[in-house]
Image 1 (cartoon, rainbow, N blue to C red):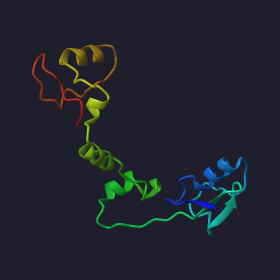
Image 2: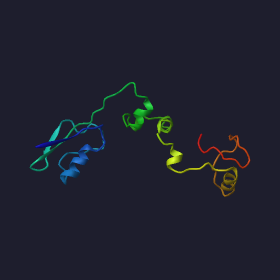
Image 3: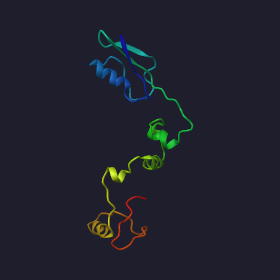
Image 4: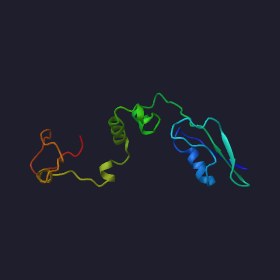
Length: 139
């Protein structure tokens, strides 16, 4: 028989995937990490078995904390400041986000019109801007 093992970080849905593939609740599922304690092997059909496993985490100290947050190696409840992780993603992206989303900088006139309409698009007190030129769209 072919044995398909599900291995991954804690609380990512391995047991839920097993239940979905099997077509019903065959393994217990909880919202808290660490519920699955042992390997659970289930017969799917005459040729295939599924093996559900407890979550595994291999800490790598040479990986920056920001990358560990992005990779979900650190529980979100322990993340006090998420902005450095977002900055890390932006600095390591192969294609800049503004190109992926087709964003263009706002002009001073657009910002003024937005403010007059009651929308604060940019804090103009901190911006060093030229009349008619593009404005910074990120800090």
